[in-house]
Length: 280
Figure: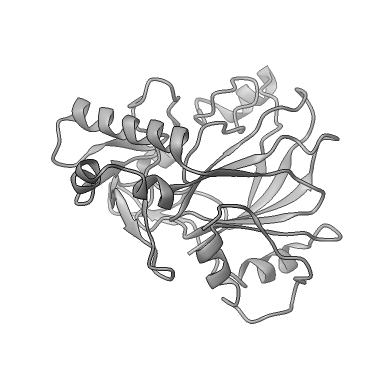
């Protein structure tokens, strides 16, 4: 199957039954809904719910309590420039991005929400403000193909494995910066390295080196080396596609089947702002 962004024109807020587009997303992996104008919050929720129920980002903490680790609707300000004033207001928190001047710009392939017990099934992003250039693409990798492309011996090795994740993975992968902050209170979690899609039935590699700590039951260094090899394999061999943003686009991707990253090829100080909902 060709891997590309499925463009669905004509979808309007308040039209369609909840879950009506879930099958389209499961098959394609990434869906774009062009919008003629910026949506209100209620309208964006209505569009998001065409793909499934919205997730309430509350997680279990190590001391047995609960923590709201994100707001229900998040503002992703990937153009925000880190100044001394912003740093003083933010305090001793790091976001993990590689661009020290724009810490909310995530330019490494990853999966959203992997450090929680029930990661989001999908992500819904609505463009609120873009640079004149569009702000750089959002890029995707087909992790279904990444699994299928493994040789038989490697596939047999990874099939039964599970990966431990944490909000702060203690710099487990030297090329990526770890996140730090209040969300470190969440329990560490374990997810299968190979996941079967609950709707499409397809299988895919499921890994996120921004949050992964180690492979369960394997020596730490050995497990991390295997995860890095799998990521390198996906980035070099798996089919990719990208979305070049236009004003008001709603972009939805399947977190089981794809990895994504932002493109940072826009001028420092230009805005690149989105509203985001995650689906349960």
